[in-house]
Image (cartoon, rainbow over all chains, first blue to last red; front, side, top):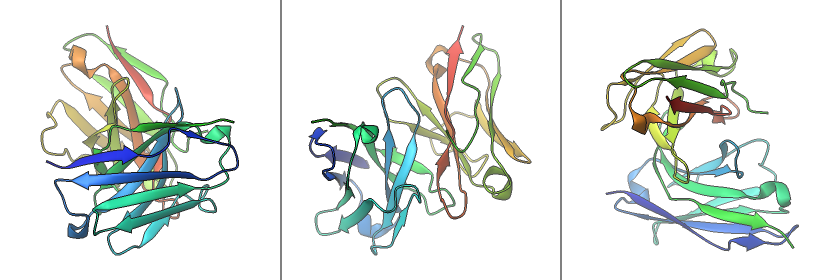
Length: 120
Length: 110
């Protein structure tokens, strides 16, 4: 059974870099699919952040592209998110997910989500 | 402001059918057959219900169906059950911005 688990600090200071890791179990990242990050501010809707393929190819939301880096470590079956220069507006629940190789990357498996608060 | 427009709320009685709309433009919903729908219960991760406009992932009951006409996609839930009460989000491929979401619709089962 495919499982994803986000990990990382729950509190980040303004202007610093948010770093999260997603550990995948039950499926090898090398076997295919796209691996993505989606966030949801408290009480609000979903926003796609970006995806990565096992080859390392990345695809980012244009509105966040200048601040986002997604990387993959196939040896650990993990992929990671870095979001720089954060502000209070970046406070959200961050989800990692597996996406189909189809337009819009339909995400069929999701982590439980982790709340990251940006505050001094 | 979300890229795709959904009604904030929808409702229906048990056993009835309800349809949720998702309106975009010719650059997203209308331009590609790549619309997905997600169900999200409070405090839980979203769950994929429909992809590629009308396909259901394994395990999703056929009470859930998707369609598209022009720039508007729709999710229909037939035979409403109490467990269907949740937030529903549409998403679409949009070319240069590969994934755009709607603002979400809260479905209430009366």
